[in-house]
Image (cartoon, rainbow, N blue to C red):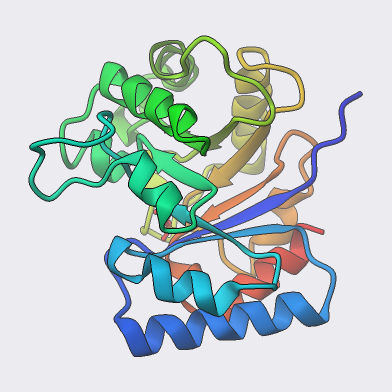
Length: 243
Ligand code: PEP
């Protein structure tokens, strides 16, 4: 069986200015230098990538972008390419977050093109998938998520270029989580559709209280953390639960 090291990734979203972001990154880096941890990744806003990369230097904590454009460069005002993320020190990029799929109308095809762009730039693509509340209530959650995987993971996926994040839309930022049985069922379903050894993260209201139970599931290889990644002690507690 392929060994899958846990990964805990913090998605800071549109939060953090230079002072507070740097302080948060330094606090995470300090803990990571002092103690063994799972793989750790921080995804700050694009404005902070370079200073946060400096604050994390030598700590083993990786740097990631929250999104990228599919093109390498060009007339796309306000967008950032995967190559630019790489240039800023990133090793990973999140694509297809529900705040992009549902908030910005991105389709599976858009997400697929962004994942291809990530690979073109040498980044690991963290492809997010997840059902809405209505889809779960209709009993179509697994069909929706496996359909998203089929539409947004490009050919050529492998354990070293892809991470899948299962994030139920209704669990993000709400304090709600699926039952442990539902998370286990969904991760097992996802596992059947991706290359062996690929990590599957759970995301959606993970916090220091619920992390241990979720992360103990055999098919859960870590967490994508939003709100709780903005406090070093909470992020670290989740990382410790993932070890
Ligand atoms: C996220 O935005 O990816 C996320 C999981 O957010 P939260 O942890 O705040 O639910």
